[in-house]
Length: 198
Image (cartoon, rainbow, N blue to C red; front, side, top):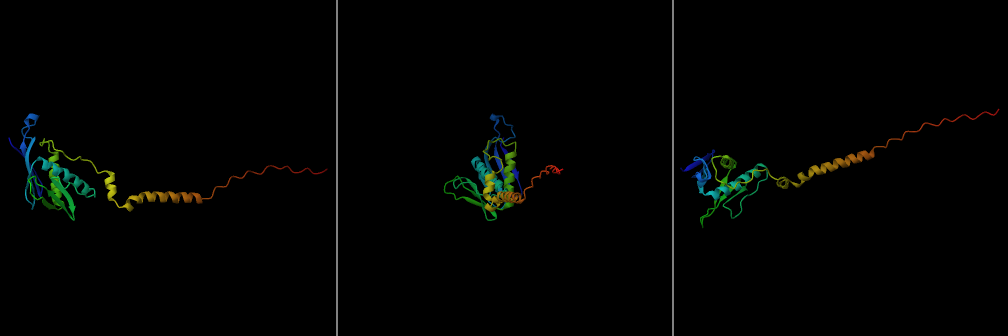
């Protein structure tokens, strides 16, 4: 009755364990109740956790990757959340906090390939129809224009408006320098010759 779902990439393996929720009408080969998961990253300690840890992992890693791809890297996860991730020089620092008291947080340094493999495993989980566990997933939507603009240098942001104003000013100056067309002159009136004295 126990179900195991596995997602594997070159440097990452994510395994979910649980049971089908037959009371909700799920099929026997689906995963409706999550009892635990394990995450193995090449060269790092294998991690185990519960549903809240998996949700926290998805909620920080997926938005982090989206911002990274968009060229706006930033940290995700607070100092008290179970999972946090931040850019660290050329690597990505994943911080995992245990729910056990007096356990120091675990820091994992991931390179781009390891992060990409982790994101692929999490995406496979999100798109897998066999997993019927109601996970709180981040919204799959593009970044807001404001987020992208704040990352761009000020000179780049104002370059287009300044170029438009300069083109308008030059066009107006050239138009004002053009001579006005002359008004058409009216033809001279027919003047009759004076009568000769006779």
